[in-house]
Length: 307
Image 1 (cartoon, helix red, strand yellow):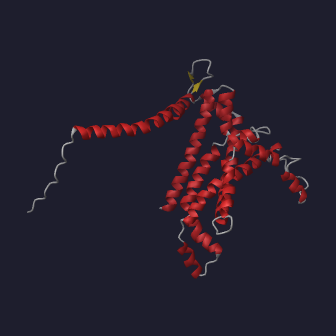
Image 2 (image 1 turned 135 degrees about the vertical axis):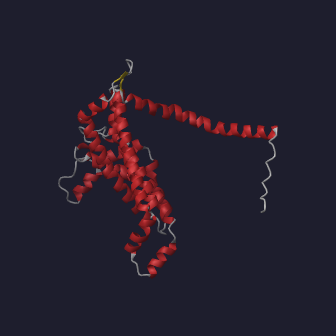
Image 3 (image 1 turned 120 degrees about the horizontal axis):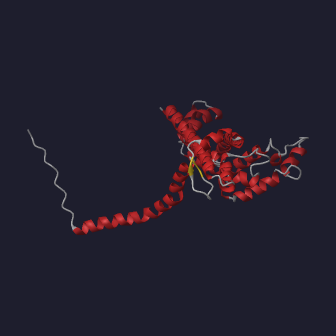
């Protein structure tokens, strides 16, 4: 029976090596600690405080009072909450699929070898880095019911009764969705472009040899190969859609009436404007649970499809 030789023990660490290890550890902490401190002070602590406030009544003038689930019971009877929840779902149902379709279409068109493709890619991405206030003001002018170019164009092609857009309770939300899609599609186009350029060209050449037409190549090669990119875009768009606030505040401020009032804006109104910090935190908690539930459901469906 042969004996296996034990590996030699590491040499004992000297004082110099221990000092060097301690110094490297301190240097690492010096890089991490400021970022962690900022995250803890400005994100982690406020989030935990908001969760606790959801079960309290507090108007910043009196001491907080524990009221249990009363804020959630009030939410069930609050018509503003039901309208804001419906409008948030309406916005998400329009914004997510339209942005994905527009971004994918742009990426396919701009993935071709055409003259000036770098300029067109930059032009498509430019709205995403443009000031949101400027975007909202310009689109408000475009959607002006009487003087806006959109309705003038619709009138020129024979539409006798064009929509009132941001002045109409029926068309204000579609106007916001169109503006959001136009602003966001450039960013997600970049993600889809990266996904398209990672697909091996040999797949398409083999499909052409087998007689596959353009639609078959798109359906059986492009779309399956883009599944990881599509899943990432879907999750990002879902989170972004449910917490939309700034564009709606600038374009319509929740109006006309309550036609574009969303949950994030209701959180702001109840907390900052009305001083109902407990009730506002309860709405924020419900919004968080909705987004978390939808995201977890998307992950589960994606795992089941890949499994």
